[in-house]
Image (cartoon, one colour):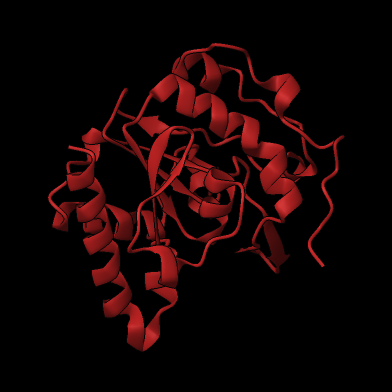
Length: 208
């Protein structure tokens, strides 16, 4: 059974209205859900203003939490390589995450990624909505199922729906694999990476 929405868990009181990206980032000391308690801080989005594409991932990882920037860990390395292979400049996109704090389980000294719940994704959604309004991308690429759930407001099958542009927030939405799927893919890693490059290239062309 899916987790029931908790109306007391929301970032809404912390999100300034009609703010620029810089104003949003400055205000992003959010305590709207319990995830903030064990992290270094909020990891906000970065990149071009009014880009062709906003790339939305799941959440910051260990390195993102420590450094305070999105996609600077191993999955980020995969993403930047895929963008390069798709013919897209890193400075021409805006990258962010559906959830702004790193959710993890501590195992010894290691912080192991834990997928955020639907309640946590919904609690953080006001930040993503405000970013979309401030950044003004032509299209959105949802990297993975959690990002797709946040952007679309419903679940989406990556394997089945990556071929068809969807729509949300008045923009085309393209769903594809999260770059971390390449790292976990073992013998399918090359196939998943090729699909991610193909999807990024198609989204770029569709928003020309």
